[in-house]
Amino acid sequence: MKGEAWLWLIGGLLFVSLLLREGQLFVVAVILLLVSSVSQLWERYCLHGLRYRRVLGQTRAFFGEEVPLTIEIVNEKPLPLAWLEVEDTVPGLGLTLQPAHVGPSHIPGRRLLSMLLSVRWYERVRRHYRVTCAARGIHAFGPAVLRTGDIFGLSTREMDISQEDYLLVYPRVVPLERLGLPASHPFGEVPLQRQWLFEDPMRTVGVREFRPGDSPRRLHWKATAHAPGQTLQVKL
Image (cartoon, rainbow, N blue to C red; front, side, top):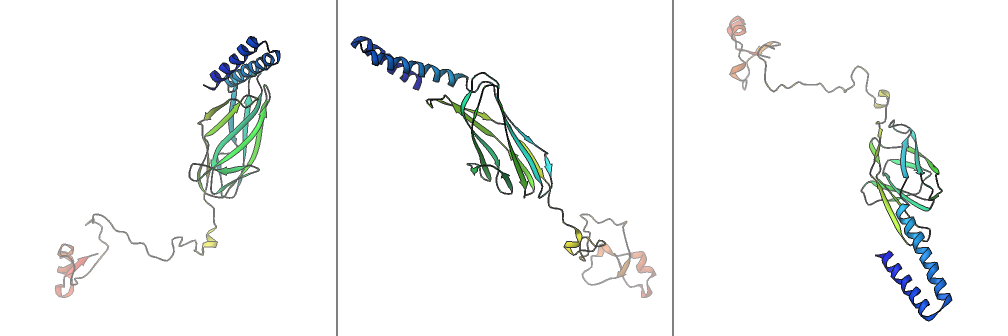
């Protein structure tokens, strides 16, 4: 719609300049026609041959480590890009990128890494960052949006990069000595009690005298027959 409006405007100026025999107005109309043609050509081919890639130095890291992050932009065509705006979604809390211009994102818990640069024909541009791992878990990088247009700023196009890269950060490793737990009792001094869903009658560890409240099913009749005074015995 914007291109059609420009064509109608330029066509009207050309018609008026020829009708009134105004040379200056005709020159202005021709210049606008050239600008519009260049703008449409730039808008059509500005995203062709444009590649975007993230490279993490490693996909697994320990708490507190620094991981190198490289962002690569390649322009594989003879048409240069006067301006290119990049907005890449990066992890929010826990991970720090340096040096980088990071702002808020519409995605909860995420941030936007912003870049504004120009790319010449057949040029490869790399940006290097350091990621400090200060939170455990799986952290996602991406998606990204590339935005560019013509040199006059009359038109803009966008390209979505849906690819995501992941960084796994392991929990912090703490020596057992700092926890104050002896090596022979890593779970502390609380005794562990096994509770079975179904009792196995073959796994009897002993007998004792019957107490009020014991289930009659736990009576051990053979042990009762041999007990002094034939007192009731129950299984343990």
